Image 1 (cartoon, rainbow, N blue to C red):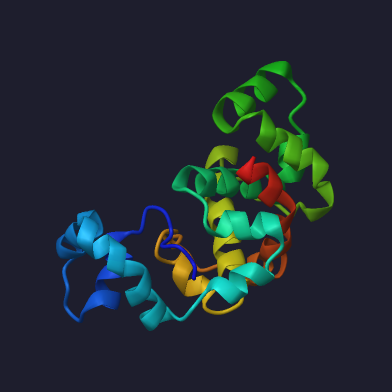
Image 2: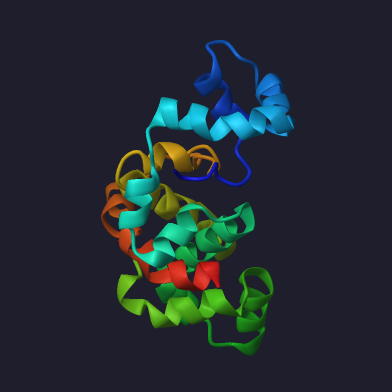
Length: 186
């Protein structure tokens, strides 16, 4: 049985528990020790048993699928850095590199270089905003591409991005996440 994902979002849980259940009530359910013990069984009834699909994933992707929110946030940053890898690799001035590393970390710069072949055409948005937005879209494309019922389980803890993934995100996103999963969970 798949464990309940870390940091379940009450707004994602509420409709699974009961029609019309409020977000505050779902948050109280999550905080209740008694309800928390029963929650895995309830979710398995509603969403299906994710354990077989989780077991079929490569080890690093499986670890990412059940990761804490901080690890998911790191994966989003790394995925966005790979997506915008050409722009990241074009930073040559020491001040620009230092600024990038201060915001995104040295690992983000390293994965942009390591996975240059996965880089996608970029636009003129500020790089920090572009990395965050496209990283979230890449993660969403990966989540949607996972075998059922994992996408529904992960939707409990990964907030959906503001936009829908583009065809390019859908095509390249899962490969990017597979490439950075090991660095994200490290």
